[in-house]
Image (cartoon, rainbow, N blue to C red; front, side, top):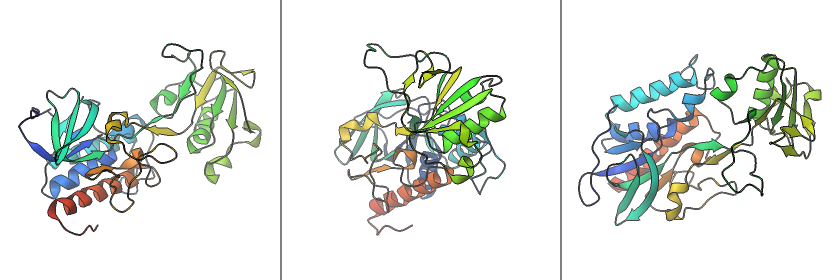
Length: 313
């Protein structure tokens, strides 16, 4: 896809919606808006669309519409759908700030030649994996030592687990799934540490009870130890946090876990004209199909707002 020239702050095209984030939610919203006859622009920080799907090398068997496809294959289909819908796309553009301006919004950031203007704003920037807390005595940005791995994805698949002593931190699905993966790939030992268990029964039942330690634990990432026990590898699965720091100027309400609060019916935030969809809002169980549905919800809500019609899906 080719980046198109940007409109200047004082002139140029005023899009019906600026959608920030080219994962399943953002792509779905953009496609629906375009096919409803509106003019969305899709802004993505990477040089390719697809979001977190790009870093999931496994088969996405939870996606009932695309059985037998890996994450990157799903991402390729998203990009193809966006292209066929004729959506304006800005790749390799990292949004740094969004602000309300008159009857719309202005988006600025690296990769955008000029600020971009839109009547509506859709936040679909997804999440990043939460890591270990940075030690209080660390004055500079901390680089974790080799063997500290945060979150699921390709970097886990790239590891050689054979003969390794592995600690897994976290009590959710990703922690249990990746503990099982390390065992399957030949780890000498795997110990999962969890303050509580939130994972699905199907994953919990497969991991031997001896591999699970419940309750408080202490981690020393520099020494690569948990409760004083040394490990060759520590994998951290502490869930996710939204990537929306660029929208702080809007003063959007957050949930207790830090995600953007929205109206469940319309995906609109507390700021009129601003919508949050997909994992950045954690409106539904996070997966590709619910993100796609979120995109449709926001697109239809924007249509109703533009046309002055009652909202319906």
